[in-house]
Length: 231
Image (tube, rainbow, N blue to C red):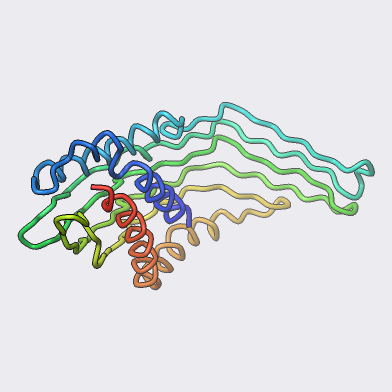
């Protein structure tokens, strides 16, 4: 579900950046190119915001966390990660984004082509009521072609500006490649977790594609209603 979580954050960022205030004050709602360029500029600002927030690349050299109750046999634990790296989140490709007064629609097609998350080493060692748990993991996950395309139907009033009437969205995922090593209590679960990431997650996304599209349509409807109403 990391793919959907990421895209949820992307959509949330768009809600804050889709039509920046400095653009809203100067944009001409009768100028198709002006609005199309403003939308492209907003996407570029999302990309820059992701970088500025330290999310691309996102890197953790080494981190260790230890927690314990005053009576450690009831609970104590230590978690450790090393060389965590995530890249590609800010590489947002705009295949198409256009504003048409003739058809009263905004057409869009954007994609994040390639996101890679890797962990050099990770481990959890914990004791709960005297029972010890040992987990070790490492590896890499590659998410390909996270894409969202669709169109927005609107009406344009002299005094009311742009009003969103309908949103249609198609979310797609090109695939996930996983090369993760997971060992729990000395038993290797690598094949199962890789099969889950590579097959179960994409298949679940396909199975619930209509519901995912509906959710994104609701989110984008709220975003566009809020921001385009200011034009």
